[in-house]
Length: 142
Image (cartoon, rainbow, N blue to C red; front, top):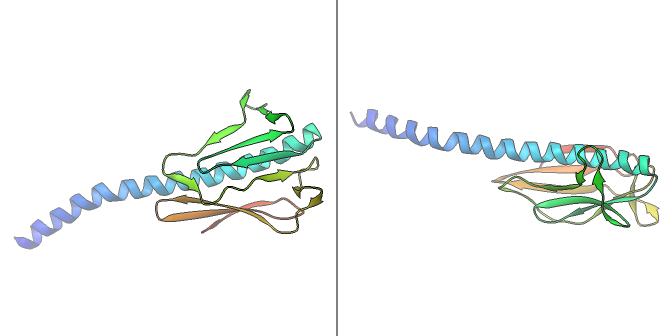
C-alpha cells in the first residue's frame, strides 16, 4: 500500500514539473532561434540600406538601429525592437554592429573575434555566435 501511495505522489509531482520544464526549454530554444533570424535579417537590411546597423542589447530586449535611432522593420512596419519571453534573459548585453555589406564590424575595422550572446532560461543556456568576417550565425548549448 505504501508503495502505491509513493507512486501516486511521484506521478502527481512529475505531471506538475515536466510541462513547466519543457515550456522553459521551448521558450529558450525559440528565443535563440528568433535571435539568429533577427541577426540575419539585420545583416540583409544593412546591405539593402547600404549602411551600418547596430543591434542594441539590454537584459531582456534588443533593437536594431542606425545613426538616426531604432529603425522600422520593413517586414512588420513596426519599430525593430524584440522583447524576450518571460524567464529568458541575456547574460551580458554588449552592442553588435554590421557594416553595409552585412559583415560584423567593430567600428572602422572588421571584427576579428566572434560576437557571442548567451541567452539564459531556467538552468539552461544557449550561445548565439556570429562568426567574424563571414557573419554566419550559429546556436550552441551553453
